Image (cartoon, rainbow over all chains, first blue to last red; front, side, top):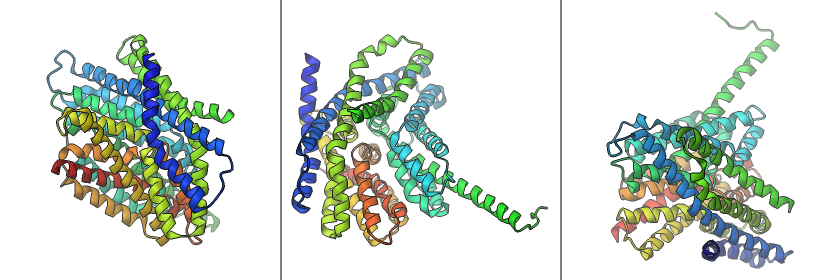
Length: 267
Length: 243
């Protein structure tokens, strides 16, 4: 009965979250464009599903994903520190944390539908030069590396802004050399790789880690994982685009050379 | 009903890799029984069921409306209505975004425990609400900026570079307690609700303005939406610390 009561209170509290978007879409549809609603029941049922779903999801987060992230962080740091839990150890003794972080980032990005959509478009636009699966793996590697680096940062307690500023610098340099057409796509791919399920879990992992590693403040060190996770796919997509463009132009140059029957310039 | 089961499978697929990784670690690395995780099972079911219902409802009601509106407004070409629409779309979809609600709640808990805000329910509620409103205002402004960019044909790269510079610059003035939360808030805004609606707006707009290329002009809205929240949340932190 307790569970049912909490389900209802969760749903009631989320109803307000959906009001702004629903009200404004209905306003624009009916008043600004002056259109009739073809199927009013569809909208009512849909909104009902959105509210109920949001409530259930947030309840599930509270009961499963947040505790899970904390639990794993606690267990894995316990392996790292062994018997003396209060002593601060060098970061590499927590290698299981880093491996876990990479595995979570990589596997959740590979399964992310938004990423698939982005990679399909990239393949289309590049005329098949960019392989959908290749790009997907490359982005997932970027996400995994981002989560692992976020954990490394918490373990070492270094300031987040250094990492972010350095990552920005790398992205800017890459942008200067990358194929123009793919730049917006690469920037967007940073945001889409973090799904609704991954974000809370990774956040909980970071907070749990900061709470369990001696000498770290949860507030100062615990956040920042998501930020790094969003930056690395931009780099990997730009790098991948650039490498394929380079290989492609080389191949074309070689084929053109063969067609003209020019002897290859080799020394 | 067929659509519903497809979405349900999609939610399970979202969760499956995470469950597999965690089970692997539980069994082989931590070497502990699976039974320890049994208490989480009702929560996991709630996550799958909730995500499925949520996505199903979005596809039934909000997405078709959002897409028709985006296309109709883009064709009509009234800049004022477009800007109003863009702002409300960004604001409304962010307020409804579950990842934002989750992270804002967690940020409030943490800040209260660390003494950055008062440790009572009212203060935590206000802080979380303030965070969500700052993020939603930021996303609204980002979508407006993105729409103006598509109409005027400004360079995405220059705007992004200025945005990055602004993020780094504001960091010097922001209280240390807010920086991690602010940087994370960029990534959490763009998931379930925002991405499909915003992408429809961008691509629809770029393809109805003659000489624009939907590829280079239509995308890039999400990039703004993950940049501005960092600046706005750091601003919110400055205000909180000042009060």
